[in-house]
Length: 245
Image 1 (tube, rainbow, N blue to C red):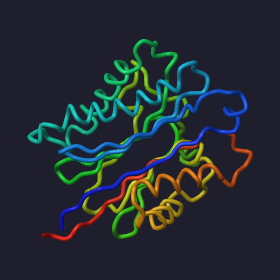
Image 2 (image 1 turned 180 degrees about the vertical axis):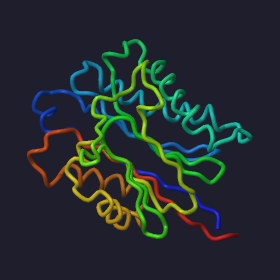
Image 3 (image 1 turned 120 degrees about the vertical axis):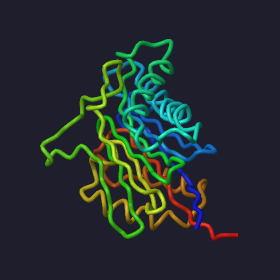
């Protein structure tokens, strides 16, 4: 059966930024084109003066790079996921942060993008998490888990970002039920990311995008870890199976 995708998301400013009058340094976006669907989440590094600008630019860069790559359906989509999409994101981000300089706009970047060859591509630069829930109930998690002996907390978009700085994964889109992206303000508080993602998708899959975004915002606004002062952002892409006509 043919499938379409619905997307939604929410972002709230953390208590520490509210107290100091600083803007939300997280950002998220969703997009839909003739070639596919996508979501992106970014977290500006708190030490950078224009990190809020950098995170918004990161989300725009994901869409711009994917559009440039996959508008031409003849392009070898799966093979170009890392080799062309990722350098394109960096290039588009450097363009989008104008008039600021890169060192003042550093941001992490996560994305989930469907492509015309029935793939959904996941990518992660920096911290946070990208979680794919498959139709068979299994879960794929990309995160910066410290118990894996690996941390990319310092990795963020810059002119020196290379393919090795990213974590990527591609799965068959028609076998994927949903993808959840979240910044570290959410991911760091969740011990079981797979279980959280399964429960989240089940609770939100029956809602329209606006209602789901509103409920997600309410959830983040009443986050049950009161001492966690970071900004909190998530975005979700849900596979909606439609009957053949």
